[in-house]
Image: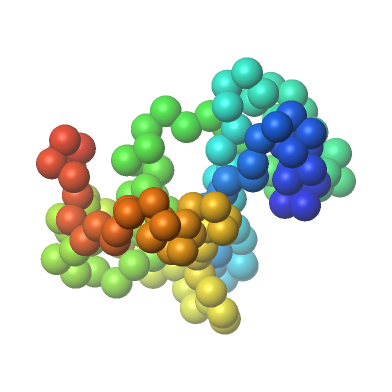
Length: 135
């Protein structure tokens, strides 16, 4: 699906930018959350392609696509599987056991990965920015 999304975006002069998290739900089944940045003008067309790329029906609950309006809330949701600590509390993350994952639990596309952030002088943030208070 990411290869198809990358090509679709490339044809429109855009770069594939995403983050993902793997987790195990209450039944212990592996599932993933993949957040892909798509600008507003392309969102509806992109959204209509998802079922075709995944060869599935939305009614089966396999794909959910919706715009994000609360980036901080999304970040806290995605990080809910981190170990409880002062760090997670300072970010306002309600931690929970998201199960054992073999391999990498989360990641990003290369264009926003560690090397890219380093090239642009963006370091690792261990505390929330003061202009985005945790509520």
